[in-house]
Length: 251
Image 1 (spheres, one colour):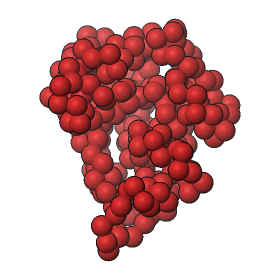
Image 2: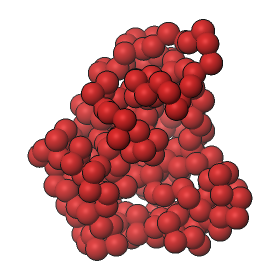
Image 3: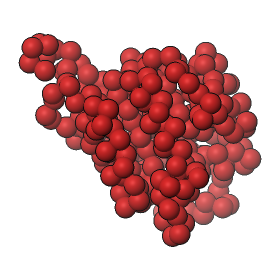
Image 4: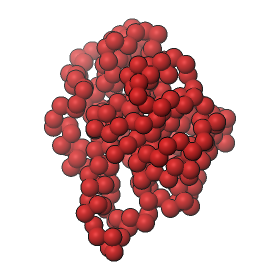
């Protein structure tokens, strides 16, 4: 399977895909600092800069993206959701989904999206033939010692006719019972964690390399956790395997 990443940041989706054995063909990120990290870690991926200028990227099986949450997050009580300048970039992500028509889409955002715009996203995707399901997961669900709750929306073509959920609870337990590829499981701290003073803990609690320096904490704060993405990609792979075993006349 192949993967394309929008709003890529420092590559949380790319790392999760890599853990699952899925190749990232292209990514798109506007921040110059983040693009340097993406280029270093994924040198063979095509790199795009401005999502508003991105037109008809190469086909991939999975498109992922965590579009900006500034107009959605609980930190901005006056946020206007998808009508905002930043979170309104969902429209560009949706346009690229329409152009590329991937088999699967994986969206990440603040849980407040459930109150500020999720119905628009589900309607948009339904209108172009995608079924969707959504789940709120926390970092501590994956043995990481902080909450960091995020909403994930998984989409796949309705024509597949599949009725079971793509998200498999058994798959989560299987992943948690073994060491996640590329990640060290960290014991729960016995004292209150101070995010402002313990930069090394901030890095490792999210499953990223210890080589990240203090200048990169801002980028890390916006990043998706690779272990959670790995879980979703593994579920997609299992789902896709089942679909391919179903005779065409039964879909």
